[in-house]
Image 1 (spheres, rainbow, N blue to C red):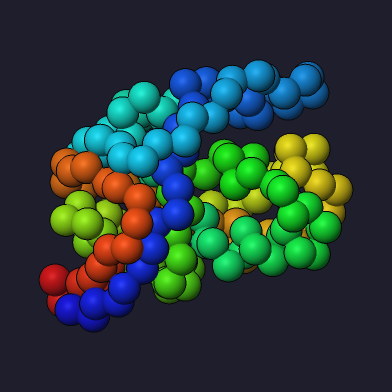
Image 2: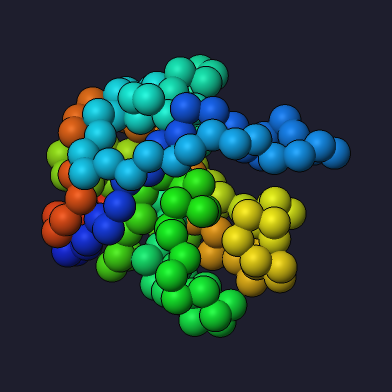
Length: 167
């Protein structure tokens, strides 16, 4: 099992959808709440989030976003004060290449996850953050995961353990 040190910079949830189901209409207006810790439930998601209990075996029970990509967006789009909540991803993490976790099981702060697929950006990113962002985020839009065990996730330094492929 490979182990690396990572930092969780933020945990974000929203009770409603601002973009999903709004095609052709205006975005919604559901606030994103920043948490120091969150309760994650097996097969359900993050308690209080809009995707909690969404569907059986749902690939996006939680979403991760890379801190370094967030910093690149701030710089490239000249948005030094931008809030990471604008991306509407759940977990802002530093220290791991998220696409390397697609198809793998990994443990973070004692919680077991499975990287299901890339969290591809959609056209709403251009409205939610800045024009041109959808194209910029191709192959770096984040990671969608399934939650395979219950636990409490907290911001701060922690360990991420990637399971060997035979596990």
